[in-house]
Length: 345
Ligand SMILES: Cc1cc2nc3c(=O)[nH]c(=O)nc-3n(C[C@H](O)[C@H](O)[C@H](O)COP(=O)(O)OP(=O)(O)OC[C@H]3O[C@@H](n4cnc5c(N)ncnc54)[C@H](O)[C@@H]3O)c2cc1C
Image (cartoon, rainbow, N blue to C red; front, side):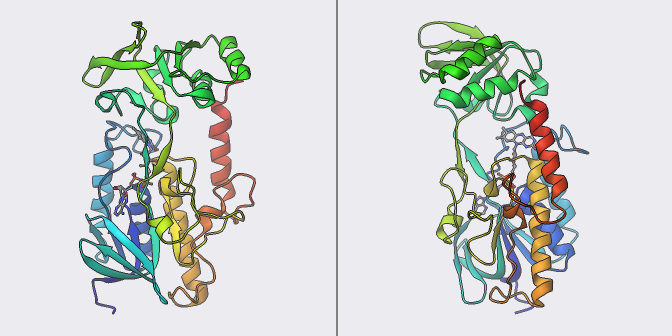
């Protein structure tokens, strides 16, 4: 089994920042790792990655190239550009199917990411990642003080618009006919945020740069960017198939006590939690691997049955208010600070 390339200590599903970061730490802990990656990265249409200290502004594909180059120094990390089509628990470990081949591992890390549901506006893909965005932390700076639109039905859109006031005061909320609550409408008014209730018909501009929005009532509005708040769903159904607790929207898989529901399975990055960026994906990837290592160390072996500590550090501290394991306070503090700093007064 030791020299069998189809057997590994851990299989990582997903080769984005979270999966590759986890693979690096695992390998440096002398584990044999196989990473499977189907290449549908969440930020694949984005031109630059921000808020990642040391690499701020790097193109996402260059970031991934560097990550893979660094991993290639370690001979027993294999990255396979294939989709995992099935994963099932065995009495000892897991069997994983990819491209018609069965692989075996002791532990399984799901880092398969999420997919953003794009607003139902024709041609929006042309602008997504350049001037249409999901995250003010990642892309707000580039549009500071510019005329910006926010797209989101009901309260979600209103909350995002209020948050964006940190970056610009020239805001238009497009509710697509679903208006926010009276309390939020009052707040929007207090902050001079205009509301457009008619449906967005089209986005107009060149080379991905938004110039104006056309509404179905014939009106047009000049805007340089649009941020949207819709829902996301897990890119892979593997977590659900393995019987892990999960939410249909995000795939978060900790239970009410913050514990994983299936021994030997862990999740990292966007697949694991509510707040998501490349930075947090990497941190979570590293953390869950540290937990894995601790588990293997405590049990003295790597089989699932004897690992009483699951790979759950990541999930345990993923919700504020729950007591995190020692050493995780700094990360929570950082998250709280970032959140608090951008809140509208
Ligand atoms: C437009 C946009 C811009 C963004 N900008 C920034 C930014 O500037 N800074 C920042 O920090 N964050 C940014 N983000 C967020 C960031 O992209 C994500 O938080 C980050 O990519 C999450 O990493 P991940 O590894 O969890 O998932 P991903 O990067 O999405 O990678 C998941 C990988 O798993 C693969 N996969 C899924 N299922 C399977 C399967 N069954 N078998 C094999 N592989 C599978 C997918 O194809 C994909 O390749 C942005 C997001 C978007 C949408």
